[in-house]
Length: 399
Image (cartoon, rainbow, N blue to C red; front, side, top):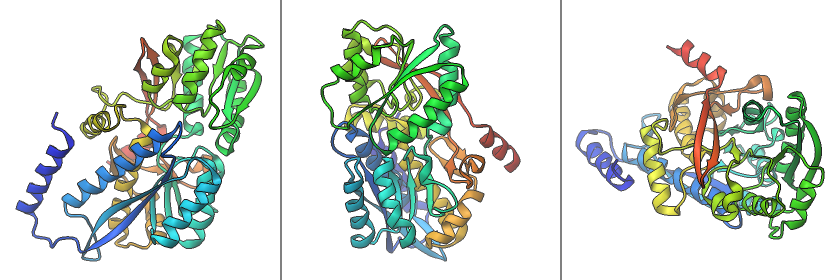
């Protein structure tokens, strides 16, 4: 497999040899608002990196053509530190100072809500990975989610975990004490209850916490069969799992937002083994597309961690944006947002669509596979991949 620079060099030569179009003369800025420091830093840094890979590839292939005019993409990224206060600052920088009209990556319900309060009234289109349901709906016509959320993940993940552990009857839940954690906790409570699992306790911690012994002790008080670590990023979850191991707890471990096994295993050690995750995939395997395999190699070289769905989501949103710009023949965010839900477009996963109107009252959710993985001997193993039924139907109808 060629590395990214080799692949892009080949594309550049091919474009020079075959294209009769003029070079792109104008730049369209694409924004990123994501944590780039702290426990979740690798999420934001990886999201910025994949967005830049997509922009570079599109630019080398001739850019975006709208109204007979050609445009190039450029990515501008800021650290929102996973807080509403920093999210507000980032929004003001991107929209008011940098004049960004398209934000292709955003993480964290609290900072994204802060961003959205400015983006919608400023006519700025945003693609986000915030897990809260509150950030989508007809009242937010310029907002789209480009990666799975609890409403897509939790039900299939929990069903799979219970099928593998049929004797498990009780669960204790842990979440970060912020907007993301609070919204996910409600969804998790309902999902576990619907499957006949009793929720013994819901527990909270502050982002930035480094001492998790009291948290682990509280989680194990009622001897739950399952511990669900909610929206804890891998670094935090690894510490919790290590403390659970010290306490001798040996139940079923679930990390819905687990994006890779690297930090989890490095920090949690043997205690991380057996953890089920619903937000990770093996992008080095034969199940991954060639594009994802190349991006995975680049992530490993750049960050010493494999690619995860959160990071690749910004790559996919750049391609969704390109398709909608060209289909609408416009660079007006409102016109682009109106046409996007009608399209079948290419992503790193292959062809997909926006949908889930039944859940959000508006087709704002990109349809991508739910990938269920498990940490085994310190490594992530993909157990199954579930394709959304809506995507199957839309692709069949488009043939």
